[in-house]
Image (cartoon, rainbow, N blue to C red; front, side):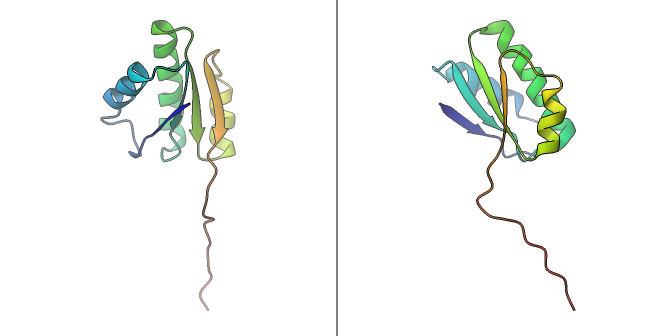
Length: 100
């Protein structure tokens, strides 16, 4: 499976990158990491690109890697036939320390 990580936090200038990745991906299953995006941008990206891909390549599927359970639940309400969702596994835990 091909994995593509989006480093931008918003949708500005990512349309061409996603299009190139999906067109060049020879496999019928691809993974796109949108865990850097906020909830609204992640929903918009996942739904719009899943619909776009389905109209051009109905056999291809996309697995969207999102940052948290809340984002996954919100997008799953709009679940499409060619879309899968998973929560990105964080290799480092975020720690918060209180100052005395």
